[in-house]
Image 1 (tube, rainbow, N blue to C red):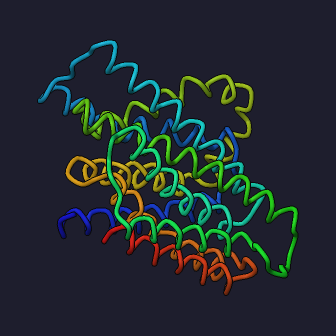
Image 2 (cartoon, rainbow, N blue to C red):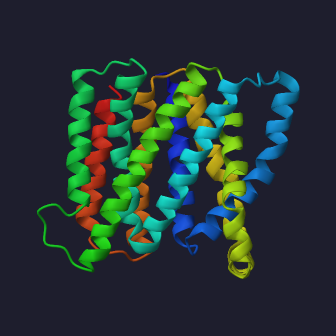
Amino acid sequence: MTISVLLLVILSAFIHAYWNYLAKTVPSGAPFVWLLAVVMSVLLLPGAVIYVAVYGFDCTFENVAILAVTGVLHLVYFLVLQQGYRVSDLSVVYPLARGSGPVFSTIGAVLFLSETVSVWSVAGLATVVAGVLLISGFGQRQTGDSSRRRAGIWYGIFTGILIACYTVWDGYAVKNRALAPILIEYCSHPIRVAVLAPVGWRQWPEVRALWAAHRWKIIVIGAISPLAFIMVLYAMKTAPIHYVAPVREMSIVLDVIFGAKLLTEENFKPRLVGSLLILAGIVLLSV
């Protein structure tokens, strides 16, 4: 992985951590996911149109199907993630989601994309798993609501599986099908708008109230979230997925700090140590 690609992924990690912190401060649920998809569709439309006008798009059945599947994967990811934020802490759900994601991504890249891993990568995966267990409270006496923590564990791991699925799928799209990252990112948003349109219609008063109270947060998330993912997709074009996917998880440490210091969440020390273990595993994975 070159220095420029590494810096691109690190910047993406900082952006990703910040928009997830903002998302935690907004009432979660399908109305929020739908409204965010509407904003993202509008903001990214000029870039997608310009790209197609300049470079064109091979509108084959395979390419359309690939874009449709990535849209569905991102839809489920957003819904599960926001439900996790609704029922548990940012410093539980986010680290478990982002920490388990590289483990599943690496396995998927090896099984489906014929990538290889080194001894360092195996050691890194083991370290990531240790950090995930520490954050989940494995073998520790915990303070706070245990049912809330357990819910966060399950939603975090489920989100991590979804992250691995769309990482491997989108990596295949950019590397094997040569689809443009901006098109992969853009097409998932109108799909979410269409699928969740009935929900937006039925819960229109909630949508209006959400927009009135959190308009600027939603606009900021809608602007920077696609930017972070597009950066990662461009990185995947030149670097192996099992390097890119772990490095972007540096955002784990940031969101553990955000959760403790800005959202006053409990059990900061074990969660911070766990996040640092995950970061150490990321370093080993990148050797």
